[in-house]
Length: 455
Picture 1 (cartoon, rainbow, N blue to C red):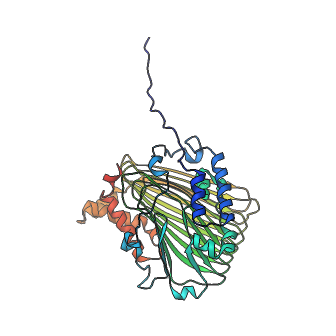
Picture 2: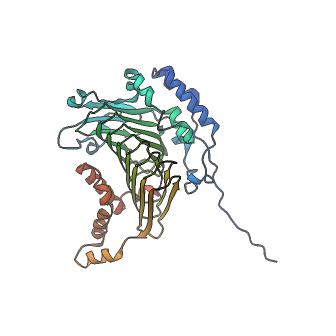
Picture 3: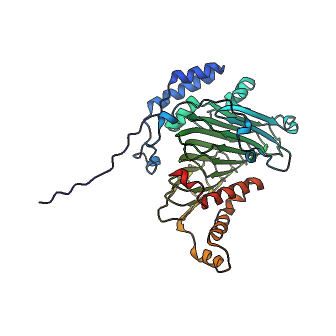
């Protein structure tokens, strides 16, 4: 009788980051946080401790193995080392339109290093500041919105950790009927080994309008680092928010983040996301259309190389009649990179006349790259129109060959093809210089300038 032995690679144990409530409390008290903030943190910590770490038996994490993260390196607070705003690349700090800066605020390793706001915008009553300053100077306003309507600690282990241990944050408030014509710009820059937990809270009152660019950046490094983030976008009645979020972490970064947008009656939220960096990204994003006439659009472009894993869960929730949502996520993958997209349109009872659409397009540039695309619909109302589309395919050799027959070198033909592939997302970003920066990132990835550091 022949005995066959099956060898299976042992799964790594999922361990929790070594955060302690005593350290969180010590930081909060040192920052002079009021009792209500400490209470929010403590409540979130209790939720965090009650939850197990997510693993691949959980549907939302089934394709995402993060067990290889070194929490000894990535699971303690990053300590600022005196870096200034000049440590952030100059191209990321440049005015977004012309020479006039609407507003720029920046953090390095969780420490505020720069803040400026155009006097024109100041006179409009706009608040554009860090979250700790906002808590001190506008406590009632922050208390009304922070972790109240959008992001909740109960949404998951990392959401609870973020709510308990957040280190720094952006607060933007645009009063009723104020139109902010110049764009606002914010940057979270991570330079030191460890964890930063940044929070973004943006509130537009009825009839307000604003365009905001937020960037996540870090240089390449050897030691594992983590970002555990949260975003809350609250769009009032007939308000209009265009929010551009760009991520260009070094390939030693592990990101775990939750973002939630809520749109009131006749409001509009245009949310554009770009992800180029990180070793692993696990991101949950949701737009909730809460009242009649609300409109939301989510657009994303991603280029993964080396052994990167970019995993995005998106939700379009329709809670009222006559609401509209649209999603387009496009990814390109080379080497052994892996992308995951799980999208869901949910129509709540009574939300008739809903119009929801989602599309995910994936282009594989090597035989070893992989894309998982899982669209979903959850319909609990009649008289709706909800559709989805998902594709995974190789780069079209026919088009590459056509360009090469006209004297275009192959690498340039591929670059032109990629630029065109991403353009319908890129054109939704209202800043030409930012578009060019993203195209430059695409070029660098195509040429393999990141891959060696991502092995």
